[in-house]
Structures are given as structure tokens and as C-alpha cells.
Length: 470
Image (cartoon, rainbow, N blue to C red; front, side, top):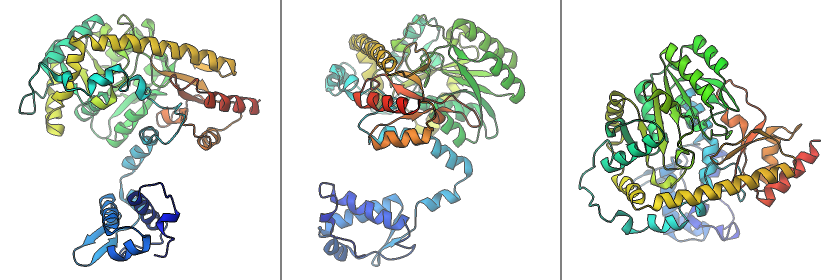
């Protein structure tokens, strides 16, 4: 290889990362062919003007990434482009990976203005006063950790405390009906593994929760979207899809829906449950914002009392996504089967995290944190609505809580064009097409995070696009 010395390119970047990226790029574009031998560590160190240790680490990373293989005594050889791996993957796996492209962008943190992010800023959550407690050993004081994995059901005192919280939402559940999980996504994964087999059909909200779509696609399950109205799933569309496809499960988010921000009203909730009962299908209700929403809000699980509704909750949206503590509540026999599945797949969840959450609750810190969080999100939502109205942006759904607004895209501007323009300005958007179930149409809209909606750069950008579209 005869590239320029590394010092002339990206001086401020980490040397190892730069070497890794450059060699990976040469492999991907075909400049380095499969089975070709790389320069020795000594030769590459001289070529790049770095130490042999730096080159050795870069080569080891490329081995770990699947670009190279090391042959003892012979050196490092190119395996080939990682893009070629997709060609041998089954179609449903490729589709599942493509579905989570938005999640990849959120985790990468490459944008300065994160309007499309699904989470609140770090300073509102882990970086708040609560974060000081989360990072302190005192958060685990008063509870000696066991020397084993802990109960596969999860830390009993936390499950008992959750039973009290659920009763405040008019959901009756004993500790044996509550399984602690590594967040809501883990709970959904367990349900998919236990209740579904390849070829089954399920119904989902559309627009809806795209990581769920990815999990279902990965499991080779057929997804059919149920049109989401401002006040919940469309009962007529739901009934028609139930009759036509005979699904096994309906996955829905009743309150502060992601991505629209709307909530299911009582009348629609009753209709959905009646149709589900007549068709004998399970309903999985995801309620990630429960702790900052009114306990009296109409939840399917409260109306059904866990007869056919399976209720999923989490602390990721209200406490910290890093803790990975969630739960699933259902009939005892379903929970027992899910617990077996949990043991088979991950053995047990983290008792450290579960005890930490429990201590935050019983010490009163979680309540105080929620009080501040509600006030902050209400203020941000009010300002976001005012600011968006001032530039002429139109909401398709009136928000009822949570963190999201469903904002209509400027007319006559294609989604891809808008995304490209925003990206060039360092603005991360979450387009409506990402939230559409396969084969479903959604309005020309985007999900807007209330914490970032009033960012001047975003508002100026949107104002320009709205003016140019008129």
C-alpha cells in the first residue's frame, strides 16, 4: 500500500481507528482483494509513521471485525468485504438489520441536533442529580448481593413494589405474575420466542415501534399493520385484519404512543378488547412512559385484568436506559414459561440493577426524579408546540404525554431530500417511513423529540423548508 503518511490525514483522530478505517475502506472498495497478504507489522509501522504496537492493535481489530484472518508465522490476510456477508444471510435477517438503521443512528451520536432521537438528553436523566446517586456505591447500601445469579424471576422486593405500582394503575398482579427483564425490548423478545413460530402472523400499530418490527422480522413472523388513529388503533381496520389474517398477537402502545404521541381513548380500548376476545388472540401492551403518565389513564391491561393482555413496562424512558431494567406482567402460567425462556437465553437479569432501582424507589429519590422530569417534559412540550406553530409546522396528532410529536413534512419535498438536507446541516431526523409496518402506508410525517424541538438550528431549518415548499 502506498497511502500518504497517516499524520497528514485526520491528525486529531486516534491513530488505531484511522488505520482500521482506511484498511477497511480499501477492502470494501476492492483495492485489497480476498486472500491478499497485508504488509508486515514492521513494514506497516514504517509506512504509516506509527509504532508497531499501534499497527498490531489495528490489525487485531480488523480480525475482530471480520476483515482479516491471522495465520501464525505467515502474517495477516484479507477475508473480503463484509458486505458480501449479507449475500449469504437469509432475506428476513437482512431485512431485520435494515429496519434498525434508525436505532444505529441514535446510538452512534454523530449529529449535533438530535430531533429524531427516541431518548431524552443525558443531562435530563443520568446527568441529573439522580445520576450522582446512580454512580454512587451508596445506591446499593443496605442490601447484600448474593454470590449467585439471583432469582431468574428477578429481585423479589422490586417485584413486590411493582405490584403496588400496578395496583395504582388498576392492574392486579402478584409477584408471581411479574418477571423482571433487561428492559422492555428483552421482554418483547421473550414473548416473541415463547408465543410465536416462523410463519405466524401478528398485528402491530402502524406507524409503530420499529425495533419491534425488526425483532418480528428476525423471527420470520409475518407483520400486518393496523392503522393508528389520533385516539388509538382503528377498530374497523383492526377487525378487518383480524378476520383476514387470523393473527396470534396484537402488539400496541396505548399511551403516549411512539411515534405519534397520541393515546388510546376508553371507547376504542373497549372495542379493541372485544374484537381480541372474540378472536381469542393475545394483546401485548407496551407502556414505557407509565411512570410519568396519570395512573388513571385507560390501559388495556386494567380493563382486561391480564386475561388476554400481556403488559410490558420499563425504567429506560423514565430513569436510565443504561440500567436495562424492565418487566413483563401476565397470567402466572405465561410468566412461568417466560422465566424458563429467560433462563435458557441469558440465565438471569442483573440483580445489581434491580436492587438499585428498588432502593431509589424506597428512598423516595425516584418519586422526586419523576416529579422534576414531568415538569421538565411538560415545559418542553408546551414550548415545542408553540415554536412549531410559530413557523407554520403542522401536527398530525395532539400529544398526550411522553416525549414525541408527530409533525407533518413540508409539502412537495420528498422524505429522502429532506433527510439529506437535514444531515448536511448536522440535524438528525426520524422519518415516518421508518415507523411503517411492512406494506403499510403512513402519513408524510416525522417523529420529533420534545427535548430538541425548540433547537434554533432545527427551527430555522424547518422554516426554510416550509417556505421553499409553498
